[in-house]
Image (cartoon, rainbow, N blue to C red):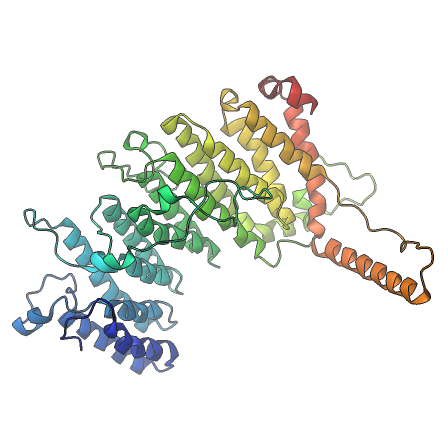
Amino acid sequence: FLNREELGVFEFQRRFLKSLETIMSRSTHVSVKELLLSSVEQLISIYGFGDGGGGAGSPARKNHTGTLRSGWRSILVVLGTAGLDGDRTISDQGYGILDGQVRQCLLAAGADDGGGGRPDSLLTEHFVDLVNTLLLFVSGPHDDLSTKALESLVKLSDILAGGMVPLAASTRRKVPAVSLSPAKGGGGGVGGALQSPDLMQSDVLMLWWPLLLGLSQTLGDPRNEVRVKGLTTLLGIINKHFFPSAAGAGLNGPDGGGDGDDNGDAPSPQRGDLQTLQLIFRGILVPALEFEEMDGNSTSGCAPELLPPKFVHLATVPPSPEDGNASSTRRRQEWIGTTFEHLVDGCVALCIKSLGAFGSDPLVEECLAMLNSCLLSDSGHLAVRGLRRLLQFVTKDLNPEDVTDDTWATVCHMLFRVLSVRGLPPSSPPETEGATDEQREEMMRDHAESMDEFVREQRFFSNRRYIGCNAAMVIGSLLTNESIVNSMGVHWYIF
């Protein structure tokens, strides 16, 4: 079947090779997986595009080179499954095969035969599948392979930015729409519907999105090293390829998440526009905050380190220094202590850079929406971190001259909403004239259930009690800063 040319409407190669995926995912024997990977390597050698080594190969193999089409998806799934395997031998064997195809793609992208087009490679039809396979190695259990896979993703992003990845005919289909209008109910677009025909009809963005989204998912990895490397790679790619070339310098270093190589002579891709950056904020960067809410320790517990400096305990006993140090040490090892600051700092750096690159401030609103998502989170730790970062954003990161009246309106309403206190349930069931005994008993049961639910929620979200004092601290800091008071004006000062 692999010797025959595949029909465009029936992917029989993938159907016949589907069994390889099943064997690789279900087998528990290392010898079986090694044999399967060796078979896959032989299939690639005969029917694929080569292994990137530049070998001549036999004439019989050359006759079948490039006949593997839809079967690539099953082969890449097998290789990706090898990346998730706990056995180091299997993962190394799988990555060796995959790396050969990555090198072959790099050679094909750099080849130019005088106008006749570039040689075929996985870039032609299966770029997204190749990206997804590398992302499986990133999430795999072997740290060094995760690092190598991230490096390969950076190389593929450079190829994509250079316009050397053709849009496969199979991907020319209608995709879900994306919206740049704020989602109803606030929240800055987190989890909102995405709809923008101008953007999502762009063929190139269809190739960028799986790469960026996959890198954002690495922020949920349980290993801090992988989270940091994934975030650094993501911010570096955004900085390098999603700004006009004139703005290429200044962020692609340690503070901005890049590798320090701006490559200012490289042409900027078609995505260097402000609207696409807004889309990346709402669909890629802001949803990463959900990984903190997925942390089981993020919503409850005593956290004295969240109290503002010089907090006065009027009716409670101050925590001992030992308790505060132990709690602080534990938090530094969790997502909120290892990844949150890096993520927000990177987003703020992108925002500041956009002010100079585009002369407009829509990304300021995106950063405020991101911080507002923190303030409204069920996690008290995330809300307190968001409040403190909001203060730093408007007082240190932004130039007071760049803070518009609309920005101050947003900040003031965010703080006003944080100070709102949830009402207590009624102390007794409602009194209704003419109610029967059965109705009174039912109202008493409903009242008891509402009280129990209120107590359970208060216990579960106990660390949200730290939000009010931090909000008061932020408001006090703003109102006692003369430059900030002059910037916001009398109206918002009184508000």
